[in-house]
Length: 155
Image (tube, rainbow, N blue to C red; front, side, top):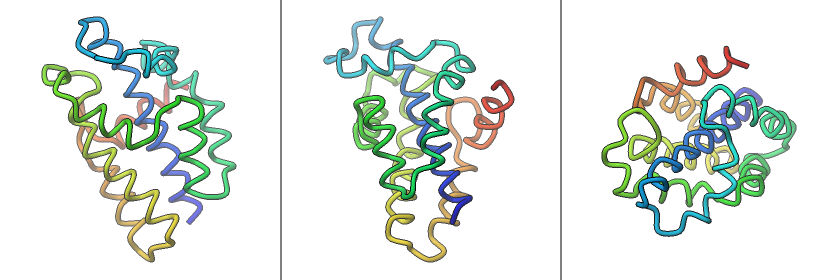
């Protein structure tokens, strides 16, 4: 269970990390309520720098005692829930975002939400299967696992 909780921390952190790219459609005037994302905009535009900025939040989340505590920590830090991120990633203004953020992250967010719920429910083998599925999911430039490996190597 411990490794699955660690995976949840990394996946949740990655979702917020990628959501910082909302800065691009905001700059193009495509986001109706940009103030909602102000805490994400405090993260660096450079992916490696942003990942490093998030290190203390990850460390706190690694110490959390439950899946709910992990997700709440990130929600409090960034003022958005995973459901908010899912809605953000489903927005049509991402349509032309090929290298960052966007629609490719909506199904990943849905799976991470399912993982958090499965861990909370202690749903037998389901969390382990979800961890494997999420790692292999593709986003704009590769798999979730490869993205996490690149970011971790930068810190």
